[in-house]
Length: 403
Image (cartoon, rainbow, N blue to C red; front, side, top):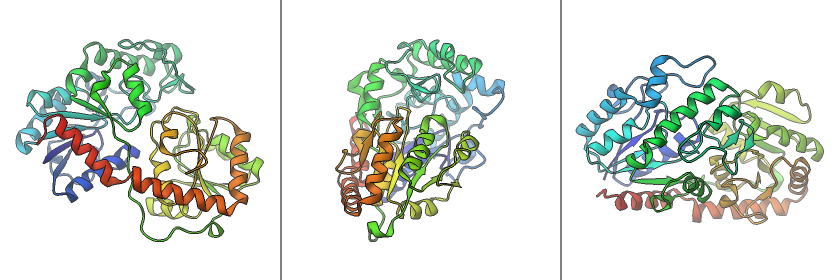
């Protein structure tokens, strides 16, 4: 089977791209021909069709987006023409889209459909129903139930949902309203893939046909080798973006109450404020994947203290695959990833004391650390294996007409 994979970035920028490149590698390993179409970002890896990628426009940094970037958010004619040329040359059996909103725009969906190629889109976040992508009202409070409607998203400006900016929130709300009023995603996508049942429910609540949404959980490879025992582990780890919605301040406060050492791997806009909170906290900055993997295998547990509505965090599965227990907020799709008390521990989001209690329990109980870690690793092998994930994807491709 030939699969054209489409995403705004052609390098590993975050969890979305990790999932996407794992899928590409696995598909190729099974003998399928998978190629990527993206924007011409300077950090892209080498790709077969790179010479035909449309220009990349920076969106989301300080300052206003340029006129070309704003125009292309609504309809990217260059991207539509480029993907049409690539499809004509490559002749894929299916086009699998990931992050296309704003940089590529739904214009690439229509271009693919015009050629008769079946289209699949994985929703890695809430971009199809939330101008801020995060389902956070005002950028801080979970927006459940959603304040925006099914087609119109003016509430984003009222609550300043994008970077606490009226202008950016208005632009994002206008762009999504434009796409939803003209039913861009409904008309351009044959099948939506949701990594969690929670996200699938959000899409349905946002007006999408549940019959066209299939849940395919994310997957991670399981590292080879033995899992370190509890006696070889010390301290706790947070790994991710340092921004308010990730609840890192909750983890720092809980570690101080528990008398535990917390290592923080990552960077982001909240780094300076967090570094001033004190406690037994080590700020390591952004680590290479090999360093992070080694650190994850050396701690008592990974802490995921999110106060935002997480979909299906890859870092949770990565820790579980490494045999490391996870203490996480019971929010969004996280409770679908593991069972409380069986594969890890769930706590109420924002509850410093509950998180501190969970950390103390794992700090003092070697048997609990090993039991949870072993069960978590086995759960990944059974439920979140890359083999199972790819077979589910291939079934989706076949259902939409790919051969």
